Image 1 (cartoon, rainbow, N blue to C red):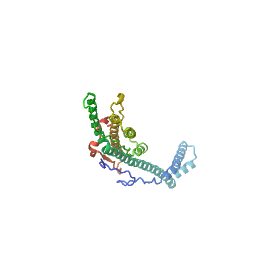
Image 2 (cartoon, one colour; image 1 turned 180 degrees about the vertical axis):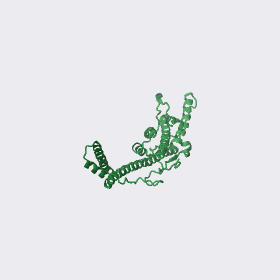
Image 3 (cartoon, helix red, strand yellow; image 1 turned 90 degrees about the horizontal axis):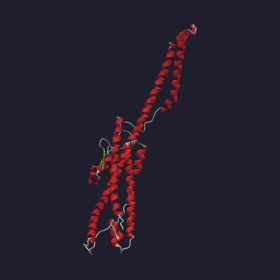
Length: 325
């Protein structure tokens, strides 16, 4: 698997975009706008109210002739017109500046969310690639070889029970290699998806991904503990060791099938980790493309991971149809 830009490219950085936009942009004058705007609004409203009251008084004939003449001269004077036009322009300017500042802030937030979405896609891709490598290096071969060997053992046990192959021995080798839980950036992915973006459907798929990773870690710990237990068994109970390894009944018809169950769980949980991380990545990509379309010109390209090259290491995605939109 590799991460290639399709309609977009992975870009978790913050800086200038193709459209010249930068998250370093400052809201120039924003604080000053917020400080002076109430005073300007009050001044305009007071002036309009005073003029209106005087006009009503004049129309009603309440004021003397000298006041009416003086008011008419004042209203028509260049000074009064300059004051009114200045206050009006200042009010319009502050309103326009605030609108521009708010629009700039919204675009900054949208740009940050786009970058966070790309980062989350990168984390999900990394998780899928990590468990794909784990499957290739150990899980797939061990699961396949163990299933074949166990089938042969079951045939041998059945033949002995029927009185056949008496005195014969069954040759096999026990896989006693312990494995470690691989590191994956699941905590970083969870943090970005819950704190920095609102990806909707992708969050629903994040939960089973987290559960699968935790389940895989638990299974690995239990298998390692089982191996340590087997290593400390006495050397003279080889037959019991075989029954424990293959999960078949031994003395007193007791059955300890922990190991075959652990191998099955290891295989299924590895596939779950791969599948759910792919589904999270795809859901994030769709979410990011919607954000980019809303942002418009200058939006960063959204990462488009390519999983096809993983071949038969990919699980059958039809098993996860309930999570596929």
